[in-house]
Image (cartoon, rainbow, N blue to C red; front, side, top):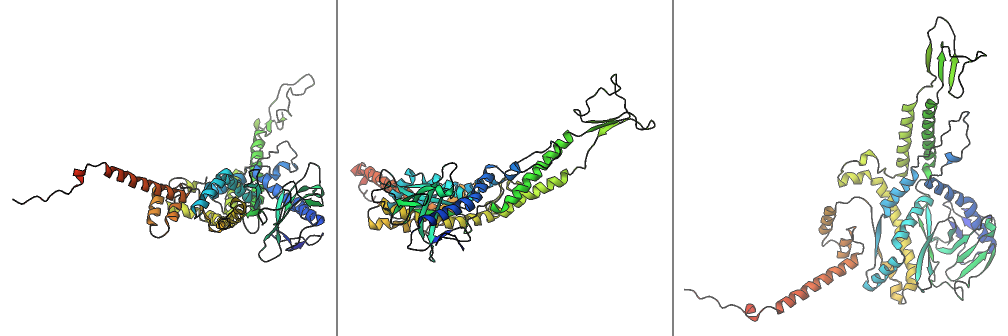
Length: 473
């Protein structure tokens, strides 16, 4: 664990900020954390986002070419890699349900009002790129809790120094153009109180509310992260991406070289001007000319060329592309191995490493989501019992893959009697709210019984009377 120079603030090996429990930061300690985030972590975050956007190192490298052939090609595998994995993990929004009907109704309304599914998609993408993302809750003008997310470039959570590593403070800040981190301004939120700051000057944030009080009773922010190391999914293969860019650029250079190859002309006489010089622009037309080398030799015309390394380059490019996907554990869905119709089991084997990676991420996301709803429930409900209902929420993630609907329905039917009806319905990815579906089924059954009773009342009495037994002859 690294100790910063200003006081009690520390940074762990996975770049998590630590501060003694029960204490609050002074101005210098706050600036130290912001300085570390700006000068150390932000460099990595900016690099990661640039690679996602296709702004790779090769575009800014110095040229060592003596000629004009210097192609800079970016074959960006990182963006489709991130987008494919994010779509696989959360392309189908997770279902979030409560066991209590009244609580569940409030949860679904809150989710819809806050566009929770779309926000989770962006949070997930940020964790893939940066390794972490921050979600925070604030009270809107309607006096209800609302959710927003922030990239870690201008927000971070400080944890206490206990074994539990509980959130101690949440910091959001901004910098104007041309300002240094010592001039940052923003907000610090503790479990009990909210402060604002400008540089190292800290004061009560009465702009938020009259007493600068935190209405939630806990730090209203949660960190979502990809893995315990807080690394983006492609950070360890950036060097492979650089080599792929160089290989593709070199291949383009070679093609351009052959297009611009010098032509030679030996033993052939061109027309000359009055001074005896050939009437021809040799430099513009890239021609090497010698009229008479040896009278006994035959005239010769051709191009100067260097050895062709096309096969070696293709093998290198293919190897780099495969290594990028193998080292991230993410399947290349455009690969020929995914062509044609594969059985469900065969597809699962092809995606096994990707599924294992997503399963690990799901467990971490579930923990973070529970903490989010713990904050939300503190002001969403007035009833103490309902405020604790966050612990009973159920989160169901479904991997985004082509599904055999008939097989899924058959699997759900086979679960009859083994699991609850709500869990049984959650096995079907097209059912977003299993509890609402159960309520609808009950409603339809009650309506069917009511219609049957009404039908019985309209039947004539003589049809309802028992017929006398027929006498035997």
